Structure formats: structure tokens, C-alpha cells
Length: 319
Image 1 (cartoon, rainbow, N blue to C red):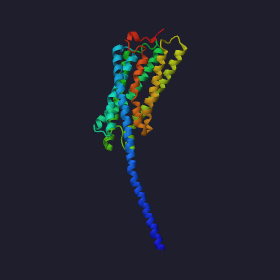
Image 2: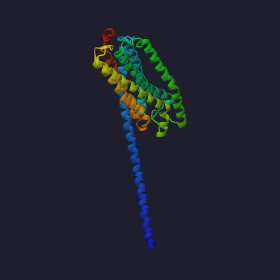
Image 3: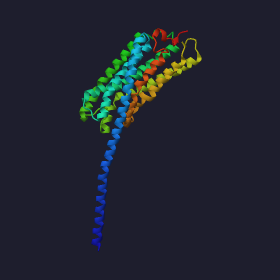
């Protein structure tokens, strides 16, 4: 009788084990299909966003660059910085078709060198855009608060020297970044780009010492923009004697507001990704939108952006 009970118990146990295994193997393909579907939907969303940025950013920045070069002389430091900002945005837009290709196909067939170049173009846009926008803020600060004392500093020669130095520093920084990126690709034998699996490899490929330095740099430049905005706002309200006479105060303050939005919405989140690894692709996608909004800076910087400089650059007149 005991032997029969044991056999019955063993039979029930075996049936339970077989049932559990069957459920596991039937659920696993469904989970895999769900993951594949989610991945395809996410990649499709990236393709749409990057494609939209290309469709808007390319004509907007190309036309803006043409207007800046043709209608506004490059004797103004702000115009020099804006030209370099437009060039930076165009370089970003040129790199985006490769990201559309990657997310549309799902794989990368163009080699590690092409991946390195596209990655460096994206990183350089975030860095150069934030720097040139800060330069524009500081230039407007000096023009409004210290128009006479800063006249010897606010020259096109100094602006070109500063812009050239920034591009040179970015290229120098790209050298060790590219070498480290290439070594990582060979070490982990990856054939992907922009996203790497597993997560540990992706973190190793992106979270470098330069990434943390970029975060510190962006916080510093954000502080400079905040201080510049506060000083200009205070000066316009006080109407100090040694300040400039501003014809269009609304446009001046909108310029500073746009600069702060650029930092808080686009530049800082993508730099904070060193702490939020899983959000890298989403934040990269968001950061690329900044090139579509930069033309607004050019518009707010000149009361008559579409007219020639001699008719338009009258927003700041010294008393």
C-alpha cells in the first residue's frame, strides 16, 4: 500500500515537472517575439525622429548659414560664433543618415572606422554647440552691460581666434577618444555601432574619462549662461548709465532664454547619460533636435535677420 502511494506521488511530481517545462518552453518564444516587436517599434521611432531632424535641420541651417554669410558681415563677434554654430549643426545633420540606416536595418555593415567618425561628429556637435552658445551669451552680456569697456575685446579677430581654438581642441580630444573606441571594438569583437550588447560592453565603449569631463564642462557653461542672463535682465531693468541702449529688449531676453533651454533640455541630459546608461539612445535622439532650434537664436539675435546688416544690426546702440 505504501509502495502504491509512493508511485502515485512520483507520478504526480513527474507530471508537474513536465507541465512546468512545457509552460516554460511555450512562453519563451512569446517573450522573445514581444522583445523583438518592442525593439522594432523603438527603432522605427528613432528612424522617424532622426529622419525628421534631417528634413528640418538641413534646410534651416543651410539657409541660416547662407543668410549669415550674405546679409551679415562677419565683423561682428556674434555673427562669427553663429556661423560656426551653423557649421556644427550641419556636420551633425550630415551624420544622421548613418543613424537612420543603422536603426532601419538593425545592423551595422560599414565598419568600425565609419562608426568612429559618425560618433565623433555627434559628440563634437554637443560640445561645440554648447561652447558657441555660451560665447554668444557672453558676447551679448558684454554688449549690453559693458559696451564701451569691452569694445577692444569684442572684435571679429578675437572671435575667429576663439572659434579656431575650440575646433582645434575638439579635434585633439577626438584622437584619444577614437583610439580608445577602436580598441574597445577590437577587444569585444563588436560589429555594431551606437548601441552595443551586453550593457557592460556599451558602458565600456561610451563611459570614458572625457565623458565625465564633458559633464563638468557643461555644468560650468550652464552656470555662465545663468549668470549672464541674470546680469543682462538686471541691467535692462535698471537702465544703468554705462550700459547699452537696447531697442528690442524682448528679443535680447528671448535669446538668453533660448540658450538656457538648449542646455537644460538637450545638452545636459545627454551628458548625464554616464549615470543613466539605459537612456543613452533616447537622450541621443533628443539631443539631435537641438540643431533644428538653433536658427531661432540667429533670428532673436538680429532684429532684421532677413535684411542686410547695415539695415538690421541696430538692436544694440551705445548711449
